[in-house]
Image (cartoon, rainbow, N blue to C red):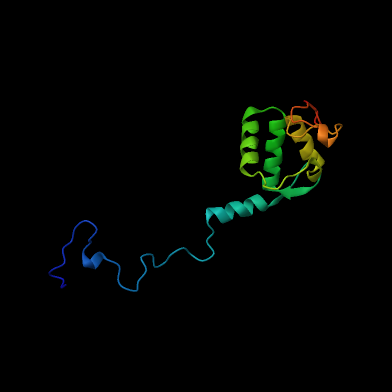
Length: 137
């Protein structure tokens, strides 16, 4: 087909505006070393920050810890958020309360997900009430 027979129209740009063979449509591309949002977010969430008890933990863990505490205090939005995440990230392996740090187990006990400590495992039910180690304030 010669240039005289070529018809332009929808999805058929003039030949002088088409990409040249062997040439990229984005010749400069993304500059090397330029980070995307996902990488920047991962880096920022992994930065360690100090918390009240003197330990350094990643920002993401500090955010999640605060969210769970707010849920344990009865804040409805926090409760919804924690429950959604718990359902989404629930492990296929069965965890026991003994696998959790005591602070986390106390929060889950207060929310009713873990039975009180004083009952034997075979007698524990999810509807058992326990205030755990948290102090209402």
